[in-house]
Length: 134
Image 1 (cartoon, rainbow, N blue to C red):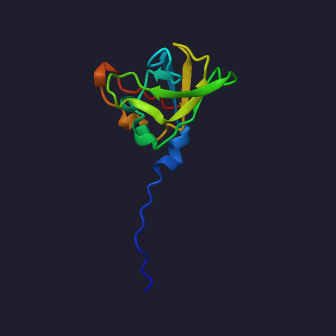
Image 2 (image 1 turned 90 degrees about the horizontal axis):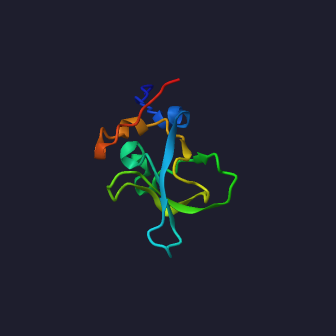
Image 3 (image 1 turned 120 degrees about the horizontal axis):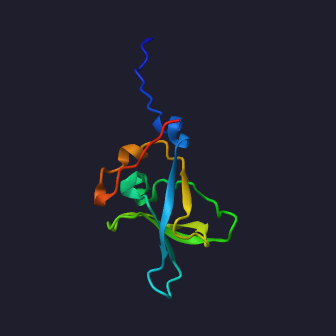
């Protein structure tokens, strides 16, 4: 009859996903060899620091840098740990400015959902992701 089924909605990411920004820093820009055209950009945060949902490149977070007006080229983005799984985007390289250097800030948007809860505590000696609520 008139009995409605119980419905549970868990909107998580829809409510807070766009509210978060992670401030990261470039710690290395390199290539695997001198003749390798693929540039690797290593950040001070990776899968184990809160970006676990980049596993299999399931989520493509937006990146913003102060050099976004410069020429861009595809690169592989990786985290700082020695774990070979700490690669964020390799199958589908990410376009970032070719002028990025060590110390440059990279803002990672849409990180309000699940990033702090996925951050490992002292994995490879790295501190967990700090969260500031404004």
